[in-house]
Length: 254
Image 1 (cartoon, helix red, strand yellow):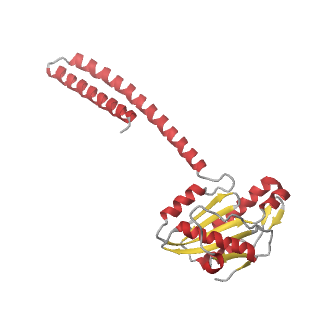
Image 2 (cartoon, rainbow, N blue to C red):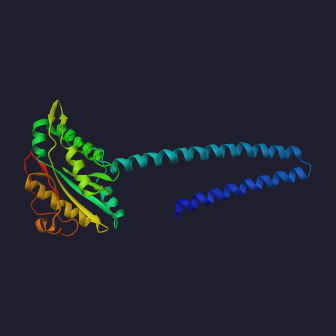
């Protein structure tokens, strides 16, 4: 127990003992027939108790307001301000909690975000990222969609990978409106399915499949070890990230 909690516990115990002492004294005075002193003491104790209760109420109200403020600060720290999605830290915790379960992971990388920023300014680029986040969130109910940082997103769900691929293909068929212009949402997506294994290893597989999607001019690629190789150690990314400006993506077959 912390020192502050020990002090608070001692204060509560002291107040309780004081209240019991007052009650005992009043009872003794009444037993001796001294009704007036008993009434005076009881009235004084009641007034003092009211003051103490008001003080405790004020302290509790202040503590509740501080707790609410801390919760708001925590929510802001865990939420990406551009897309409203959870940040990488929460995604990693989610994946840790999913260890040993069967689920699908998609790594989504935005293609040529620099061109979007150059055309529509960074404000338009933020709107573009927010539109992608909205499509991903609508794709599969449940699970998690998070922004890993920059132009990269993660989707984790218990749904079958083929169903996820079909849903993603449908979600990115229609353009988004950036400013007043329709703009295709150009992304590369890698998919991998884990069956009770390490979710972070599966992320590495999906990441390699995403790079294959960039090279193959497809919207979605499923992970194939013969083509994509094995993921590196956790947290290690390829030295060179392949980026392109292709827009006419097509869906791969599993």
